[in-house]
Amino acid sequence: MISGRVVQLRRYPVKSLLGERTSAADIGETGVAGDRVLALLDRASGRVASAKQPHRWRDLLTLRATGGVTDPVRITVPDGRHLSVEDPDIDTALSAAVGRPVTLVDAVPPGATLLRSHPEAVLAAGLTDEVPADESRLGSVLPGTFFDFAPIHLVTTATLDRIAGQLPPGAGTLERYRPNLVLDTGTDAFAENGWVGRELRVGPDLVLAVLAPTPRCAVPTLAHGPLPRETEALRVPARLNRIEPLPGMGPQPCVGAYATVVRSGRVADGDQVTVGP
Image (cartoon, rainbow, N blue to C red; front, side):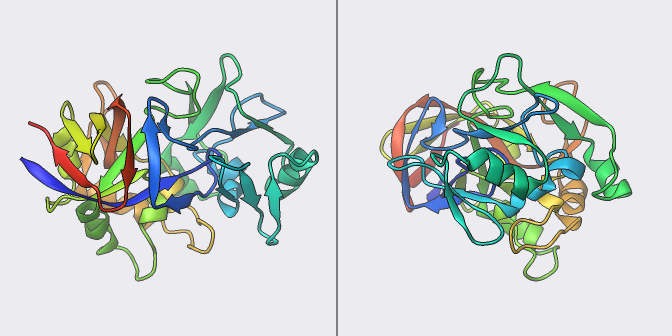
């Protein structure tokens, strides 16, 4: 049996914005409390704004969202201002920050979709060119949420360390891959691939069911706040762990795994993790 501990907990209050670390969190059916509770809606297209379409939305990753559990979400914009989502002018400020008219929403509009640019095409063409993209609905596993697929994304320290060892110094890995749970389980890199169909017990109560390896889009290659653009953040997983995450998808560069919540619980840094048979 595999066991380990929670190294870090993270949440991202606004979809596709930078998020925050938290030392403890309640995790329920809809994921980490305060995670992806808001999103920006593109007024022109009606789609949810996502950095998965970098030529249009890469500037989302210049914004950082915090809070949202016991107090309103606050968004820090590049000029250093801290904006409350309760500010009546929030849409105007965010539209100026991302260069496109947007509306901050707290509920998924009926039939809402986003565009995911083909990551290899982004690598080949660069960030400013429009490239082929797939349109998909949100919340495949949990309808009515802003999650792309499932409510929990987890990754091991071994996987992050293996990738970091092939990136330039200071390139960063944790923020680029946007996990909710970072786990130290003493396993080899990409052990998460073998956890599909198994349950993880985290802390005294939380139980997760691992659904699939997490296929990576172009987002890890983008600048994340102070972290510069790094195309190797996609090329390295493509070399080390190119597998088929779900039937019919074909081989994809994968980092970490998606999970759903079987039993809710409160989790804190240092809590024990056990991977079931």
